[in-house]
Length: 461
Image 1 (spheres, rainbow, N blue to C red):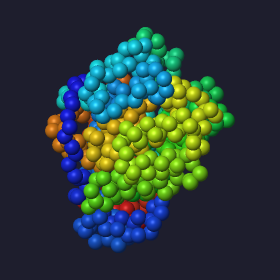
Image 2: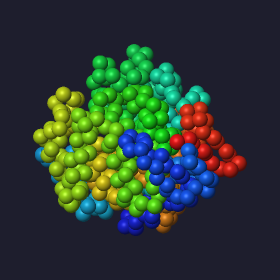
Image 3: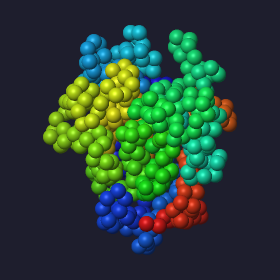
Image 4: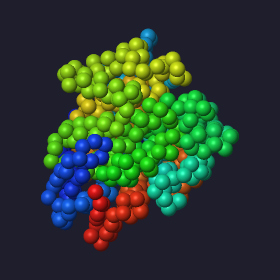
């Protein structure tokens, strides 16, 4: 991997080639809105180019990979409190030496010695990580099982086939110990499947899984939104069990928030500035969250700080005090398992992600930089928004923003197993597999039309 620092900005969104008629009745509101004059006259459907969607799915995988590996540099460096891990990073720390994280025994990141962009050059291979590998598994399972909605048994069987246990993993950590690239609730769910034979949703039920409130579902399920373009209610049906494989309660709501945004990204108004597109997506996702949830209250609080004009660093510090220290708005850390001062808990990481989303204003580089510098489990929010903005801007947009091209190969066997070609895939092929999933969803779940010759999906409103 090579490391590069830059301050170039993303160009305007590349959605202008799509012909879409949106019915914005999802999650509140019943207004019709024309994004662009449709190439095909339609009053009860919107039309999406399959080839353009493939380019955006490629952007999803590429954008997520860049952000994931960049975020890993600062992962768990800063979690608040006393000591060296308490002073949060600011924008001035970008480009400076990385500081050790809470588990590294004083050693800086092995990914990069500098807080900066991490990428793989052409001819190289991206490695999978926990922000990409289970999404890869779910896409594969949907194709293998020829279904749009996975059953609990299909999820369990897929996890058992492709995810190693602590005992049989071929991977080792830097200290030589066994490493299966599972943590917290993912690890707990895997153990419940393997040892007790439980299937989702039991594996994410608080009765069996004490780690149900952790971040895990927020980093493994966003892709389901892309499988149901413009149909968030369908996306939530498809993702119901994958989320509840590891999460319950507010942690599940946070994951659903991301899924809704990804689904609606297919039909956001391309005539809006990208800042307003992101705001619209977030507001639509917020409408579906119960008012009593601390997820809703966190979003509203951070939005208020953003609208008040305070810096993102100040908003992040306010989040730390309000939620990690004072535990307001129903965010009760004492009732949850505390690991590293709560740094794996879903709520605090959701709050950090909203800081980077709102203050990044749709700019890929700015959003990922803020996510990487915000603290806690920083690679996860970075990867989430890197994937979403990578989809919105597409492969071409990412390349233009960095003024370069990147490797297009992906090694799922860095963390998982049991896939063809010794685990080496390409973003092109991964995007095409995503289209195959959507073809089935359009036909069977949306009662729409897949026209390969005309390169389009016609999806009823």
